[in-house]
Amino acid sequence: IAVDEAKMLGLPILVTDYRAAGGQIVHGENGLIAAMEPGAIAEGIARLMDDPALTERLRRNLALEPLGTEDEVRKFDELTGTGELAGADRLAVPAEASASGEPVGAAGSAGSSGAGSRTAVLAEGSGGR
Image (cartoon, rainbow, N blue to C red):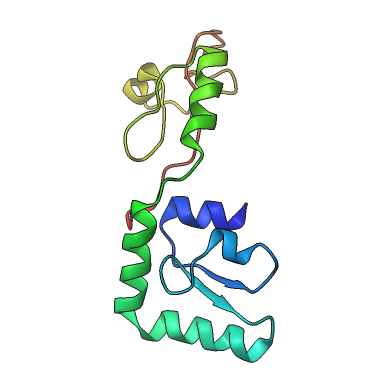
């Protein structure tokens, strides 16, 4: 889940070479895979910190990848009647909440418990994406 969250946020990813790493990360394309030892992990961190071109390339490539969660969110929206995904930031906020400036309550609207209200489905991504 953490790798998927980092992908959604467009953050450079460094993972150790656990069994499923290759299914989530292509080394040098959308992240880095390091051996599961302190020196290799430190080297990967240093590489991300010291090579802004690499970091930017990883971010760009991540932005081009399908997240794989849109279909699940769309199914949820269909089941609950909460509507379409909101723009590129993937944040659905009730119109009344954005107009009032009130936080969205547990029921999905600002200060209301209406059953048809829309709720935030996924957290907004960072400005880097």
